Length: 271
Image (cartoon, rainbow, N blue to C red; front, side):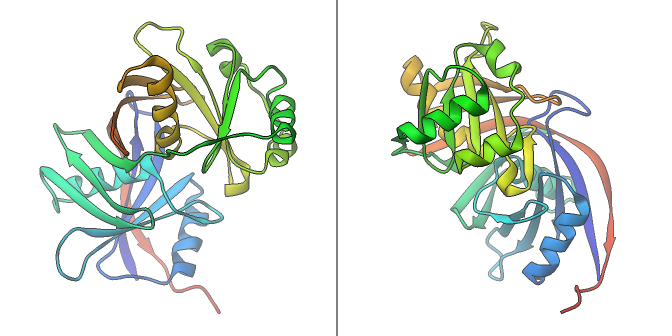
């Protein structure tokens, strides 16, 4: 079986920045076991698989880390939309994806710029004393505030504390959920910064994480009393996101830079 594949840096600020995602453009569904093996072979934080819907209305979209399928991935959604544009399947307007998190849309703007629409993570709960203690061990410092939803979000004292984080995998595993570490931005043009760690999902530190911003944007919109926010993720590669909280949705705008394209030649994995 031959399938076209593209690798695209999402939420990037130029080549070799942002979060690289592989996008496999399929004509028909393939087995989940094969998708997982392809994602393992790619060894990126996410591989997206895009299949046209039978009725011709949008695309089915699934995301796999090297070890598991995930319910929501922002950067690979942005990359999927840009891959469809580069392949000549979409040129402008809004692309609709059917996903495990419901219908998502991606608005193709000028070349290399995409806005994705994702569900906001509302209804977060304060963390308990045991998890808070595990958080402070993991970050080796004081946690200003913390809550949990899909992920645990920990606000640290300042941007320098987020930059300096060097958590151990075992300490992160004690938390029990992936960790978002965040703080107000030191740069006046950046409202908040973050880093994201998810060893339980097969990704120790993710370069730029759209799904984490589904939780970050409502949090900082409340703290800063604004719905339009600029964000930067402080991984080694780094990335920038323009964010908007709109009711129960989060809109994330970012740049996409194509890095590589090719063809997968593979067979179904042995049973």
